[in-house]
Image (cartoon, rainbow, N blue to C red; front, top):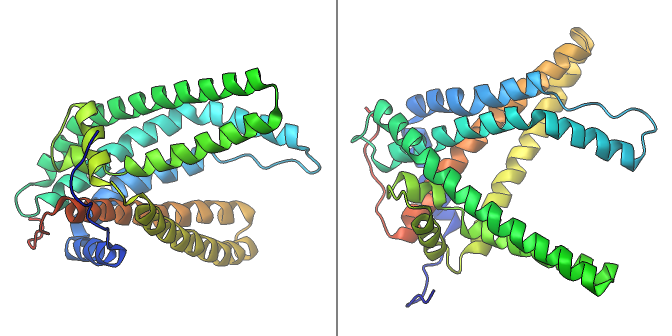
Length: 276
């Protein structure tokens, strides 16, 4: 696909200021949406599907088998959580894009309407990724060299990360621009993120590092206190709650950041009104 003109350069500082302003100005309704669609599913997953504790002295094969069994069993829960959170993300994006012009109910309908296009996009991307992986494995097998196979897999992983960054705006395209054709959604996200994959990666990485640090520090402090006062089970529940709360805040700010990135790269002005 040929694209004319110079791509707009993403300003990460401006993205954060816009995202923070949107969340702050509309914190009441966003807190409700984040609680319902981000916090509760994540907390339920953490409490009902806790990751298994590795036994003492377990080797790598045992650990891999244990984790594989866990993820296979947790797959239906994880899928359900992903679907619920996707509806919430599209709803939040719709509200942020049409502040003062859309009710919460209308935004939720937008979230449900955007679920199928998003799933179609993900299916297409998974099909392409599976095909690429199969080709890489076949080429590695033909070469007969573990080094060649490792290089091919490494290149494929790097390419997958780059493509994932180029697809970061699929949700805003669905929610804000109301595009429903998955091919058009992919094309539009690819167009908007041109020459900005590195900037998007840096922004998301910094946000994720900050959240990870908060979860680690808060979880450790609360866990130590509760372990001493109420026992290890209470500490485990507290850690799950802290992780879910901070994770919900991270999800909310990430969605607001996607809205700000889409607005900046798409050349749209930020709405100044808050939700009614």
